[in-house]
Image (cartoon, rainbow, N blue to C red; front, side, top):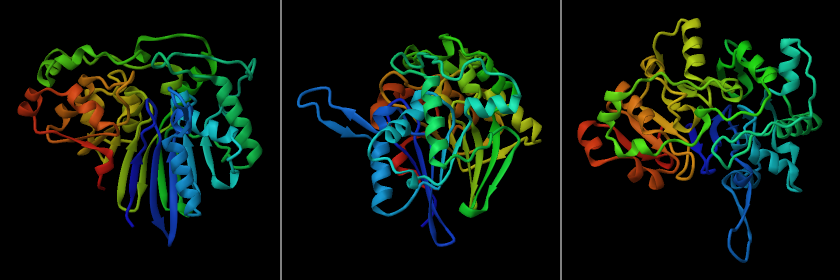
Length: 356
């Protein structure tokens, strides 16, 4: 068995399952869990049955095989990343023995690291990420309490420049985000806001060809919102493979990390593009530093469609690249024009067909 990376269909969110064998043991790393609907969802029409989401199906498959999640990484507190696992934990089906360890940068950990005083640890911040999504600090507090009581929390702050050589599971993590200043923003800027960088992706640029978008691309946008710039991003090495998982991180932070690490050119086998393909999180400057042929955008057809200019920037950096969607059938024809395929040699694939 080689390394398999699955990008679950969890609507607007992220949920990634990495499975492989190490020392004759099946290893499972899970990064994020989608929204609460990734666990269970009620049908919109009669008889209003409860439908199992892709995250719950993953849990049930692991249970059936008598496997566990060796490491669960929650990159940040946004509902489209933490909602699924929180709903699982609130259900009668939850078994803490299914999870060996959790990485999660909670408010308490950040507070201890920065050595500042939190005024109130129980308040709630709501923020419309893609109109219908909620971001709730109270959810993060609830999750923190549950993993703490369960004894599964690997209670350490995950921050840029750190290396975690997890020999027990045969994996090495080089953390690229967040930095201390990013964490300070998350701790100190708890306030309701709806920045432009978090609004639903523009559908207007779908009518333009890739060539037209590149001709007028200013590439001056960046996401500076506390939740996203403080999300956990890293290079993961397993066996002979390297993967770049960018969560919802800022291209400014990642470029800074690569510079600090004196990495002028990063060779990886796969890049998970930041923030569902938002143009505010992926820049030409960052893409120039990455040598890769496979780029994954996790998103769906409703509300969080990727910006086409983000894909144009990827193709500019590598005209022969392979673009992967977990919702390929719903997105490909909406985004690309016949002229795009004539102008460039890129190809579009489903993550179901991803071979590493």
